[in-house]
Image (cartoon, rainbow, N blue to C red; front, side, top):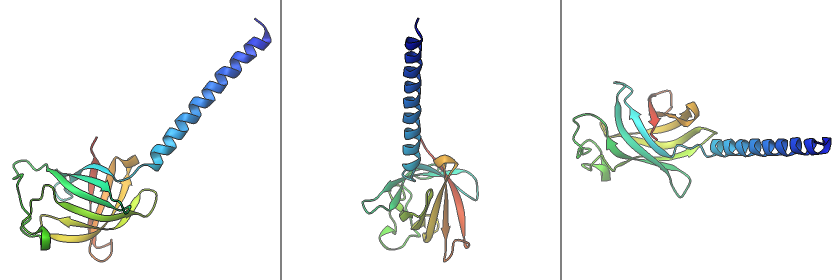
Length: 160
């Protein structure tokens, strides 16, 4: 075997390896850029630590995000439960299928603000902000009155 032939093989292998690394890097960068709060989330009650509901968050045409209750997870809870404490158009509406989150907009690489969230148990609406944690596997959803300091945070877990 000649030196030219061995050198040519090494060059081909190095070129293929470099191309594979570039593709892997591009895929990782693309995934990181596309990391959003869109998806299905299991809410965890901050008082009991138990799963409460599944919320589907979708991006709206205006670039904001909205979330709808798609399933209750509390054992024995009535799936046809209505929001008796809600006001306006949501009064006495079924909680499953209700949009409880709207207006969240990106305000950083993994944070969102400017939205409002409804607590169907109390019928109260709060300002909210959200932060993706652990590579997008968790979402810290903070509801508050006035300033974020005056509120509470729930951890939501991304569903596959």
